[in-house]
Length: 310
Ligand code: CP
Image (tube, rainbow, N blue to C red; front, side, top):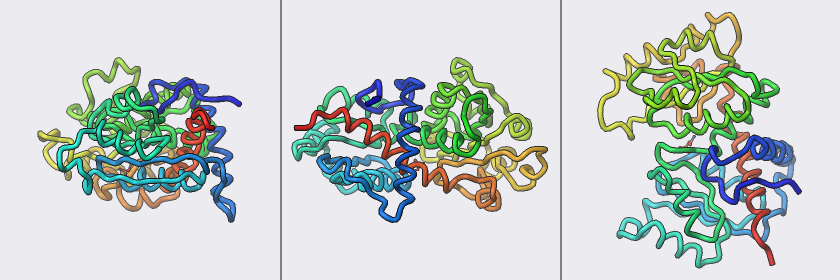
């Protein structure tokens, strides 16, 4: 059986193009499974997975849990807000206590960049990064690229613009790595203050005018402004940001071609995207969420196949 070149999924940077294509091929089969009347396979009946969320999440947490249950794994959920982390327990102590309960795989979201990698080097379980601070969100990038492939036939040669708060976005960084590995051209667009200075080293185009960016692209991925990670003001007001970088139906309809509109969620309607765009036929936001389950099933299934079973 083909398998991944990695033992953990801590970031897209570690994956090869073949890894990503294998994840997509496996996700194609699982997408078929989750659209059947019986949406479950028995593949991981002997595997226990812990979902450790040290940061808020709606989509990613539910999507991983759904993916694990569709594969028939046993699932335990941990949320830092209601745990002994509040009493001063360290990450490693918390995780080792959970692993003593015979857990085979850990899916972790954590506010610190590098937390998933740190953990993967210290525990026996497989580790999947569900978002580590401003660093990477690999499964989001995989489901985004899988959705582009589904919608446009392939990712190779497509032009994708990522709009908004690039500076604080793990989704942007993982998307850049993933799209480039699959042969897409990537542009970032936003206010100068929200584009990191190192961005040119990543081989992406930079544009500060939304209309110019939209005229160039096949796909626009609209990101949320991450106010919770901004300790200083990066632009005068949300209203001004939305006037310059918000995607409206008026701009979309004025383009000479039909572009695909994506958003990783959560959406701030009326800021980075208006409601009529979010709910338009050009938007694939809910397809992204559906594909997230199939892609996460694929990642978990492929990593679990590397676990030695008795
Ligand atoms: N896209 C995403 O990561 O959403 P959540 O923060 O709700 O998990």
